Amino acid sequence: MTSPTTSSVKFCQACGRSILERAEICPLCGVRQPMMYAPPYGAVRPRHNRVIAAVFALLLGGLGVHKFYLGKIGQGVLYLVFCWTFIPTIVGFIEGIIYLVKSDDDFAADYG
Image (cartoon, rainbow, N blue to C red; front, side, top):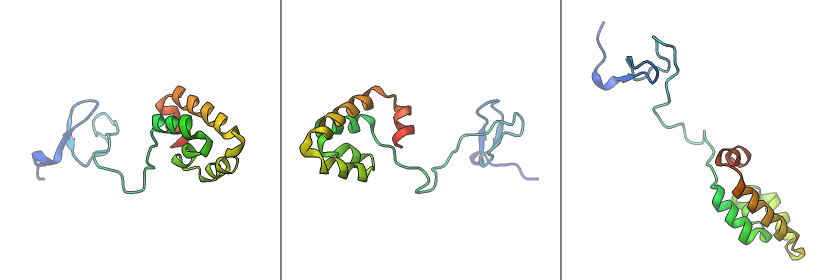
């Protein structure tokens, strides 16, 4: 049996034992190892920035710019249709404050 070269060896994140680089689980402790490669293209949706969405909502919420930014095209069009009533402006301002109050993890869970 041949021994692995130093370039194909990594260390377990939990126990520190040297394991093969392509190993997904440590054979000694059974802990799953983190991914060492990038996920395939299209597997992960791009994350939207919470602060940018909040600024759009606070400044341009009446036009629905924040909704377009978050990928909610239908809601953005609805905001545009009713922008003359100033109701989307008020709702957009409130949504901007909500975006700023949310944590990054909560925002990512809600808006991808």
